[in-house]
Length: 355
Image (cartoon, rainbow, N blue to C red; front, side, top):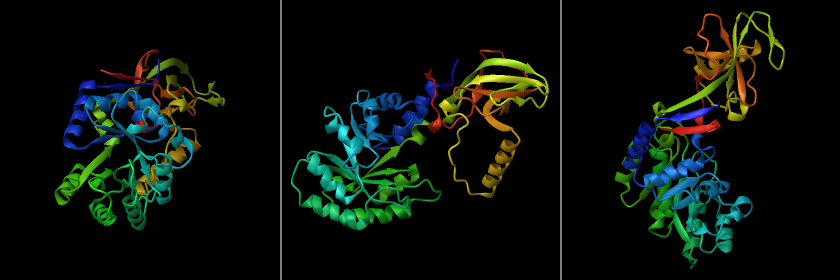
């Protein structure tokens, strides 16, 4: 009786194989909540796909994937001379590829770990992490003057999700990579994110001397939403009349119907909404409507009952939610399952069932 992610295994695996076959050099990304699946499960699935490298978000995630995937492990969060990067298990250190996004960190990493494997991150229009063109050239000069067992694995580009082609920006950045004079062949390996298959194909055709390694998370694991279904269990059903008092806050029922108690609450991510950044007129209007409904106590929930998305009777609890079902709707029984519309990257499921 819990919040469960149910996966049509045949359909999901077929999609994973299709993406892997169409993306040479694929680097699956397993980070955070593992896109709803957990990072451990995704590590095993990456091994099943036969890829040679898996990307994680932070150093703390290495322990969850290292014994499930025996290839290289790319850490997307940049290395810093303090914190979690210091705790990498010596047994897997030779498999770990660090991301270096500051010139001063390059020297610090190699001083601490002479055999380090790393990629140099070039800043993009995201302006999150990365070196400028001048800093990348300085890094190339520093590496050219260093002898040692360190291994440059390429250059990383983390592109934004903005609509429109990324090709003009990538072409400008590749000019910076060429002018940096990085040791070859590693200097011609580019680890990229958020490029379409068409964009990658055009880049490979235009830059045959370069190797492009796409890091893919959402489009790989969640690319076929028809294979995924989130369900909650009906835990209790109560018939109510108008004016009945209920809930933590002593609210009154607006009209006759039923209160449903279903699994799934704030501990799972239900009712917690991340900013979407939709600046369109439609997006602003939707935000205004949601705010108006909230002000009078009627907030649409992600739970679907009898074919309709039902209202929260009150704000969701930690592990369960109360819904209002008006008279005339089909009332489910205790133990029945109802569909839930979730944001997979922000939901902690009690279980994942793959057929």
